Length: 151
Image (cartoon, rainbow, N blue to C red; front, side, top):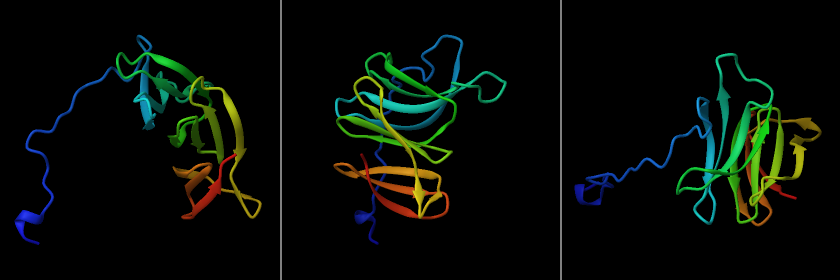
């Protein structure tokens, strides 16, 4: 390929620090998957590190303002998220035990929760993308790509 047609990295990448990942003083949060909401706020998952392994309620999904990083809401759970994505109304979160949880984007309340099964057998979702209204593409730990209705 001629040099003029190759993609190039920008000469000066523009990177700016938004805010600390941990919003609770003296608490360390480990990063998980995230997405940007249509209003520019961030929705991301993670776990709390305290040196004693994952504790009950030690995983979270949070929606944060980009301006200062303050949480709008925090949803806590006992297990880490494997992926998440959001549309204008809902945050879809997959977990390492096969569960998918739909959270209200505006207040973080649970809209619904289900375990993902194929032919009656539980599968673990490892990747999630919103493919259209009420439509999710879900990758699984056994190598499948599933086209699922959400709702």
